[in-house]
Amino acid sequence: MREIIHLGCTDCKRRNYSTTKNKRSTPNKLEFKKYCRFCRTHTVHKETK
Image 1: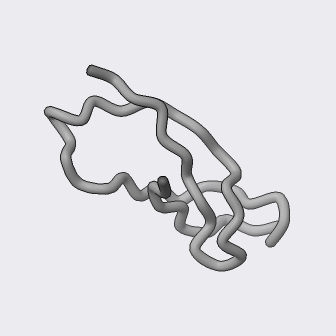
Image 2: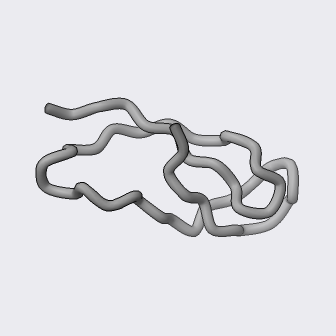
Image 3: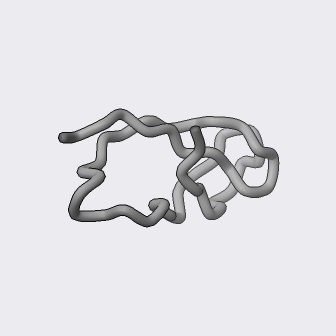
């Protein structure tokens, strides 16, 4: 049931990270505060398609 998802920066819109998530236990979109190497700062990263 785990699927690979990509996390994109909310500022520059680039996809920087990939991870897996269980669609049954977390149907909502994931959101993490991670480092963006393009913005050179910690920004919010949201799940993208």
